[in-house]
Length: 189
Image (cartoon, rainbow, N blue to C red; front, side, top):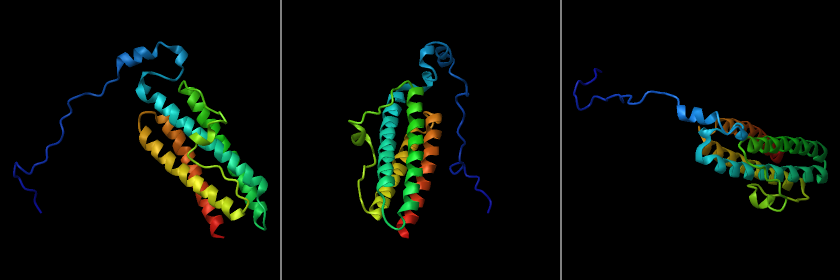
């Protein structure tokens, strides 16, 4: 079918009004304030928000470490030795996430908040002291799903504002998705 040549139906392409150029003033500003390390003018007004969100994620990871460790040491039942071993693997991976997040907070000029007094208040995931193996698996699956949702939202919010943090969170998200799939399989058996 031939395209209409009616001037009312012709789509006009947007005209480029600006050229792509670097912000020379920001580059000049990056030459100063050396005490800020990697934090340059590009981070803009959202750096403090990112640090707060990362501190909440740090709290979530630390609560997950504590929950997985407790479940590792208290799991009982026929399937418990293998699952308890996996709980310890997950705890170790969550601790590595916490370390990476804390390191990123410092890179952004913030201070990682390891305060036990506010850990559970800031965490997106809950601590669990279940004694039943199936309840342990379920609580860990819920926590992983909460982490997946939280990281997905963070990644979307950060977008292109901080590509380093976004990549870090995408990497952690992949681990959390793997944990959730594993826990779902254990729950089904």
